[in-house]
Each structure stands twice: as C-alpha cells, then as structure tokens.
Image (cartoon, rainbow, N blue to C red; front, top):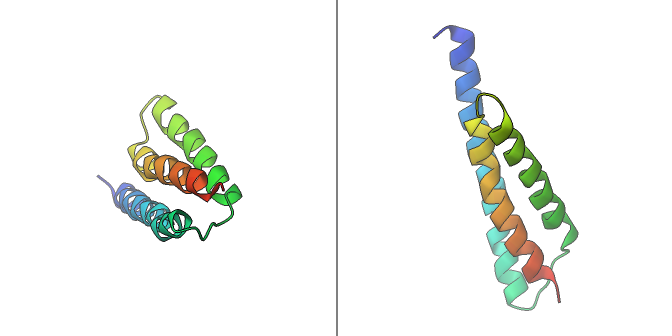
Length: 88
C-alpha cells in the first residue's frame, strides 16, 4: 500500500469516527425532548435524509464504500429518533 493510500485510509477512518460522534451528540437532545424540552425537528430530519442518501451511495458503488456506510447509518437512526421525539 502506498503512502497516499494509507493517508486516504486513515482519513476515511477518522472521518467516520467524527461523523458517528456528531450523530451520537443527538442523545442529549433526545433526552431533553423526552423530558418535555422540545428541540427543533427540522435539523435532525434533514440530517437523517442526508444520511440515507450517503448510505445508499456507499452501498450502490461498484466497490462498497464502507467508511461512508458506517459513518452514516447511526445518523439515520439517531436523526429519526431525535426528529420523532422533537414532535409535540
């Protein structure tokens, strides 16, 4: 594996971890929503839709793009949970 490939692989892994952490940060908002302090549902809805598209892209590529898939699947579920709990 050449130096450029290693760099791209590391960047993909770090980016996937950061993306997952971004969606895990919805958990406090979900808890607030469940406690009656509702947040705006638009942002998590758009994030969920975005993650659906990126996940489909990663799956449908000729060679599956696993970092994109792993990074966006949590966003689908956590975005959906945040959206639905923000509705009041």
